[in-house]
Structures are given as structure tokens and as C-alpha cells.
Length: 255
Image (tube, rainbow, N blue to C red; front, side, top):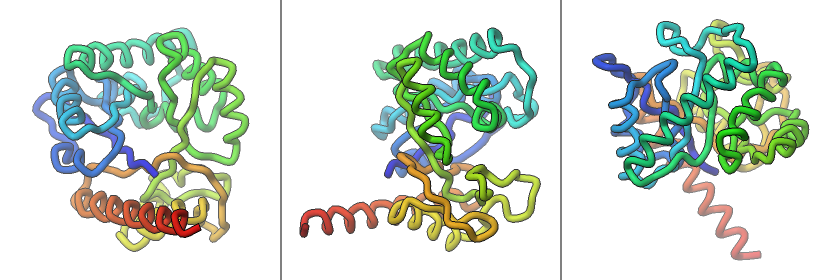
């Protein structure tokens, strides 16, 4: 199980996240591309940091919403949305190439991510945008019950998809994230976070807000690099995932 984290979300003098401390503990860095956060210098520094720690680089495009941090939904025509996504991925590609590295996948951010998982016409536009620019780039999407349908959509564009789950978010019975404005939408304790990660890794299930056991397949788990206890949370999740991986490897070897 891989760990991914949103990175490079500072903007000029405004700082966000603990990238330098978090980067050594993750496998995949979703780097902001300037529309919800980041700027050219921040992007370049984050790419260099990811390269230093051998972390896979992903483009993290968003709606053009710096003030709202990309968390506000926007009504954008498909042709414009496609151009917005391609513009952002292209910018990060250029910075990566200047440092002799590359973008290896795409994960949309915030409201764009949530909208495409709720409205597959938007997801279709996102897939089209990525495939036209570089069909070798996997698209990271939320692990949901409709995974077979999403795979079929991606196949139409020659894309592969990576499914992700969230370590610290409460899920609805429909397999979506509980809106942040609702109580307990974000797990406040390390115990809850570790329990959710362990359940994902060992049984491929999540416990929803109503107590339902939801079966999902996840290739990667999203961890968050901001907040007062972010470093403690990420290091504990890294240790837990590594321990579970060793245990599963040992069981396989014994068989």
C-alpha cells in the first residue's frame, strides 16, 4: 500500500504544510500546480524535495480558486476545464523536465476531485484532458463502489487508474467522504486513523458513519501534511503500513 500526500501548497510568503518533514515518509507527492495554491518557485522546490527522497511526483490540478484553496465548486464548460487541467499538468511537466525527473500521475484537487467523483460527466472531461496530453499518466481517483464503471471509462481513453482511500476521513454509506462541514467528518484521534488504515490494508473495507462495512479496493492511502499533528500522524501511519506489509510478506513466504 502506497502513501500519497498533497504537497507544494504554499503560495509566495504564505506557508502551508510541513513538506520538508513529511516528504521522507510518503511514496507519492501530489504537487499543486498554481491554480489553488503554489507558484513557480514553490513548485520547483517541491519537485527537488521529492526527487531528493525518491518520491513519485503527481500533478495536482484544481479549479482556478486561489482565494478558496480550490475547495469551491465552479461551473466551467468542458472545453475550458480541459484546457485548465492541461495547462497545470504542462507547467509541472516543464519544471520536472528541467530537473531531469518527470510527472508520473495526475490527482485532481479539492472541489474538482469531489465533483468528478459525484458527476461522471466531469470525470469524463478530466480523463479526456489527461489522455490528450499524455495517456501514459495514470489518473488517481477515489476508491468507490463504482470502480468497474470508472475503469471502463478510463479504458476508453487508454488510461489506467489508481484508486485511493483516505486515512483520516469519515465515509458515508455510499462510499463518499462526509462533507467537512458535518460533525466528525475528519478523524480527530490517532487511534481512529490507525484503525481505518489497518482495516483498509488487512480486509479492504471501511467502516462508514452508520457502522456499515464498505468493501473497497485501494492502491494508495491519502495522508495529510498540514495541521498541528500532521507529522505524528504520518510517521505513525508509515510505521503501521510498513509493519502490516512485513507481516503479509511473512505469511506469504510461509505458505
